[in-house]
Image (cartoon, rainbow, N blue to C red; front, side, top):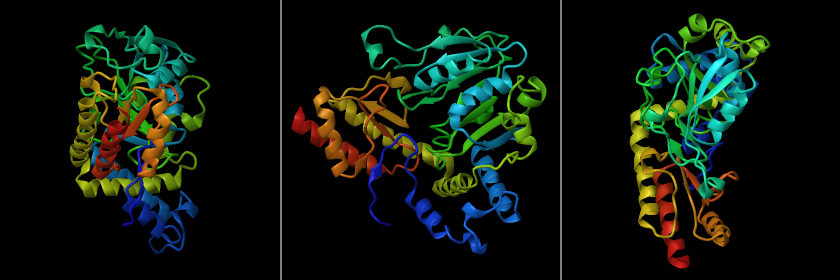
Length: 377
């Protein structure tokens, strides 16, 4: 393998080099078929065999029971902000959300177009800090006010921009809403550690962070949610976005993102070869602790997220002087440390440590942090 730069982008994100090499090797002729996967009809026997293996591998790595189904869709997690209320808000159109950052806010605003949205809890700060970095924690569960007749409660499991991650999942019974389904945006930490997805009625996300390339959206749901609880979407929901129709047609109601599904299959095989979600969890913890340790020991760099809810996937941090960002990023790029600029919404710097980021990449970043601090502190 050649020495590649370390890509800390938040998504589309770094992929294992072995996966990229295999995709290159198979580009013109997949397994003797004489075709590239890009050229295959999604209804042909060759592609259907590939598709079914991807589904089976994903189910196995997630340890899903039979009543949980996987849908492969398009539009990313952002499209799901509309499709979830369309499909699941039911006749009373009452839905609850917890706001822990940028993506939660987008989910709330989108859902408001379709029904009665109640923010059951928010972590948004008031005052001067909120001007640049308004979300730094997860509200204590004692502060949550979930309506017991809500059609669902939605949370974002990991906020890629703010760097806030749930480490303890809400107990709906303890929140006084035992019958309210819990829905989780898991775009950025699916299979990053062992997570029992059956704690949720639904989990969803884009594939381009831990599972592959952009273009594929996964929806994992308890079939009871769309067969018994809410049997039909709201009026006006396009049929191609009706979860029931997508499920009835095995995610092929329309042409699926065939090549993105193939790439996810390669990544799933790579994850399994590493040891599955448990091995990913150990590696991701080691990477995150190394980087946070370096930042915490420094009097130069600033982190703002409460330590108990720090994300292991996305680590935002700041420099003491805005004039230092340009030389920091220029020096990082010269050392093969790419895409460390923070999101425009909050500025600063951000390192994304998804599954495919090797430990050596974080070690190289930590070395650059020390070098830059010594030069500019």
